[in-house]
Length: 438
Image (cartoon, rainbow, N blue to C red; front, side):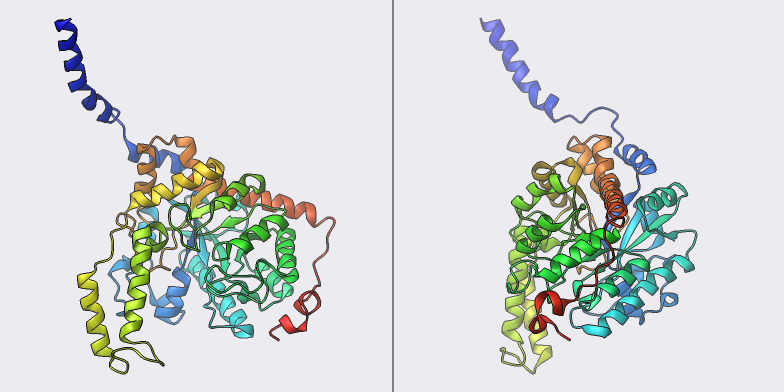
């Protein structure tokens, strides 16, 4: 009896060492490289085109993407660029949806023009660096370009206001290469509700539903990042092809309206859509989300024109006071591991076939520690491998899921085009003149 107790005691001492040991000889970097050789890593959202417009007046020649762009000077209220060619290659990027973003402060024909100028920036990037970038229009294009060792460059329009309530404009943007449209940005459109605006339509108006149908006919993916939960559900009721969330995370972890609620995640298997997980710290960490709200409130307390603020009209004092507040209340650290938590959560609720990557690089002022730029994707994939993900599962996350969704959207389009002509509906006809802006 005493002998048995002695052996039991020795086994208990050894058990923690056995359980905590990593598999001998595991080379995660080699595994990631092997996966990304066969599957293009595709990011759903990168805002570099807007940064080129905003910082360099839209002149692609003014920024050399063949150099380390993180070393470039940036405005006091800006951030270091997160994208350049060397870092893209180190990150194993095989395909990128470049956002052709226009802020909601631009409306009407001005927004249409600015969108065309953003499309031109992406085209110029491909022309200036032909050994690195090639424009892609189909899932097959992405695979071909990746196999040739270049980065497939797709385009996504980040805001329904950019089509100016016009289906003909939508169609022409598709012809120019746009392969998704985000139905709203930070504010409602005349036909769809945003996640970050007061509900107006409680989802989609009749014209909004027609936009979705026409996008399905074209083969343009419907992006429901930025839209309200009601709009997400309305789209999923109408959509005949897989949807995408180009850059959203899981609301089950962080209760932020920009994240995707569980009931919507559970709808994705039937639709075939993909949530491309966002890296923005406030969408990834509940503590950071609360800090962001506190920071905004503190900033308004010091300087909130035109109505007030302790130091209104005294920008230097307001700035100094805010800096003191930040010293006393540092932002919570957000990590790569927390992004991995969102990926695993989406997988758990929606399934392995419905999760991807949508960094929002160069569109966010801060990133999680360990995900500072486009060179860091392999570290995120390795983290998931350490958590037990197989190579096949990592390949689905990296690019196979969104490629499958895009190819399905193309097939749905081919079928619909045989039975449905281009829609001639207008917002005035479907929603009434009172709803139209023009």
